[in-house]
Picture 1 (cartoon, rainbow, N blue to C red):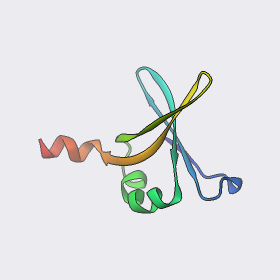
Picture 2 (spheres, rainbow, N blue to C red; picture 1 turned 135 degrees about the vertical axis):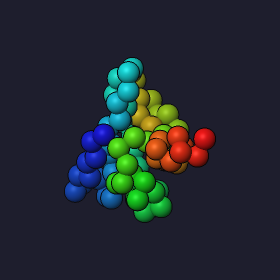
Picture 3 (tube, rainbow, N blue to C red; picture 1 turned 60 degrees about the horizontal axis):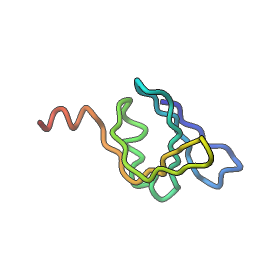
Length: 76
């Protein structure tokens, strides 16, 4: 996972997540980042939920929720 916070993004965090199917850009608004900061910064494997946004052929995910996959595996 790659995290970027450009100075011109008004506090929005951009993450690139990768799985077997390819890359997905994830957009994290400042208020969501504050709520999920420890999960986003503290874990390499994440389960993310949000709204898919499309612009032509490009797609991104507006993040609403994130959980550490390690936590999910340990809970089962």
